Length: 113
Image (tube, rainbow, N blue to C red):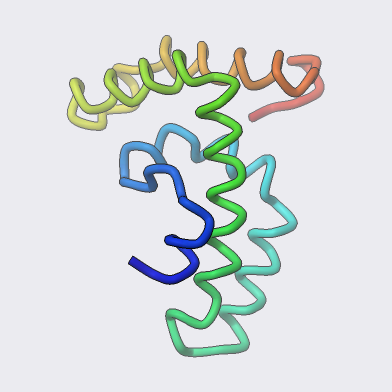
């Protein structure tokens, strides 16, 4: 476990958790992800930019767990149950994204997650 991970108490970042939150992370963290990619281009060391990426990921995942925990958990369980076949979990995915839009106050037509 990295020092950053210990210091900021990251939520679970296993494959299932990240897959479930991927579309939200892509939308909410677009600028931070761009900075992360720029950092990666400037440094060949794979660990050079991990702290930046972990902080952003943790912040969004913590918010998802806090405000949409029930739908997030249901989506994770469905994904595990269906061997990560996303097509089998569209209902749970839609429920999570609807919860997130409501939490953020987004009008569904203007924000495509």
